[in-house]
Length: 252
Image (cartoon, rainbow, N blue to C red):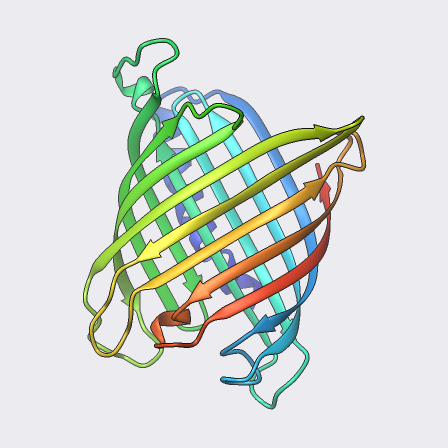
């Protein structure tokens, strides 16, 4: 299971090495995080159409280079109800090339800070999606990160061997830090909008914010809550997740 989970990251890491070597890549920042989640409200897992509680161990890693960035994560999930497969995984990897590094210029303080090509790979149980596109980094007041991406969403491997249509994905990612007294908090998350794929697969919406409390005072320990709204999960009409998880995280 772990071997298959790291396939997307391995592919993009190889591309990163090739491109980075040619561009004399310099690492500007690198950070990793491990999260342990426990929550309820997850459908289409071991309990089928009924919901299940779930424990998830997540590893994520982000590296910023002078020519772009690489982000990937791996989820290892264990469902606690139902008779189906209780253990499964999901992984994504995203490789972004900076338009600035390719010679584009953006005015100081402009709404658009950078625009460049992006490549995403999503991998799960007998499931592989390739998503080439473009991402813009935006200046939005109060946000340390706010990006918008538009992608072609192509199923390269489907567990049911369906002839799925190529569609679109629109993605927003954000990080909004704030303080309450002397405590450092943030709201971090993403929203995906994925189009219909034919063969009965409906359009999908995934909205997943995290409320994060930096109990380590930038020293690495995080406590938080994560809410996920998943409309038409996996394209199945009227199967919606409204899941809430508590989590603890360690940054390093």
